[in-house]
Length: 435
Image 1 (cartoon, rainbow, N blue to C red):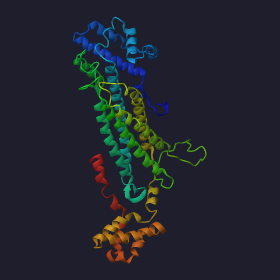
Image 2: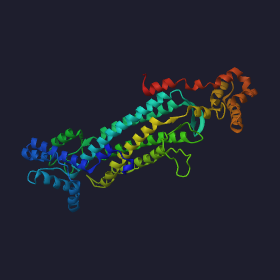
Image 3: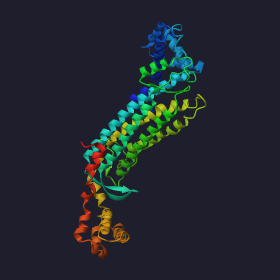
């Protein structure tokens, strides 16, 4: 992933030196377990730990791989350069390359998941704070982009909080599912290595043994992991899209913070564009682009082929680094987001009283008017408001069919905004708990 959309902690997980460090730990812990079992001499296992403080030379490993055309062999050759060829002769005993590669990949994904979980928790805190701040800030709800009925800005933030809270659960589940390791040999039968070695290595790396593997850990786990990243990315886009709509000039109910010295356009100095949320929309697309390849990696030939390998070398770092950046960026947007309550009320009354049409419809039916007739009475008056910007309440008061069923006072009371927000506390209790 390009530096523009990267943060250092997540990038560090995917650094080649970090990968080789995990490879080393897998091999060293495996040697310890084999020594405990009496399979290899204890002194050879201890000798491997002489490299525990070594900074593996990535360039040297690449140089060896240029000859061997095999990355794991290149690493093992470089390790022997530090440990000694005789002392290292039992390293990788009974193991296959995927024991190292897959176990390492899952360590990296679990570490990435830990950062993403922290990111989501930070976003949830920002969403909750803004939801409570604007719990009673009334704005118009929209369906199909058209005014519907009143809601509150707090409910909008609460809705996004609930969605991200579900994503937090999904991310935790995805982490648990991907946190497996396999040290099971060439086709997963443990023919040349004891299952106790796998148990020991997994325990040391914070993983659980894969119940049954072939030469690889089953890729349905990875498909589920990247699918979860895709869902989180889609939720980011959902929030970003709402903010982008709110920032439109003719709406302007909310907007990204515009910092001192920021420029919106090279041509038009007046511009304040929602560049961060537009960027988030694009980043979400990139994260989702990893999902289908991850799904297609599930079907491998027999006990293994390497059609998945090139895919995972790209989507592992790219998807997690991008999502980490996107979550942090969205948290910043929410934290600093500008809210314009006066504009919300102006928009509410752009077509005076029109958004109360359902209350009038229901009142007419409760007064004995058939639903079909009630709908006709309300709609014909609503259309006048659409076409001529008249006042909906005044139109109703001038309609003989309406006033035959409802008194002026009964019509008047149908235009109380508080009617639409009376259950906000109930919804907040459901989302955030009773406190």
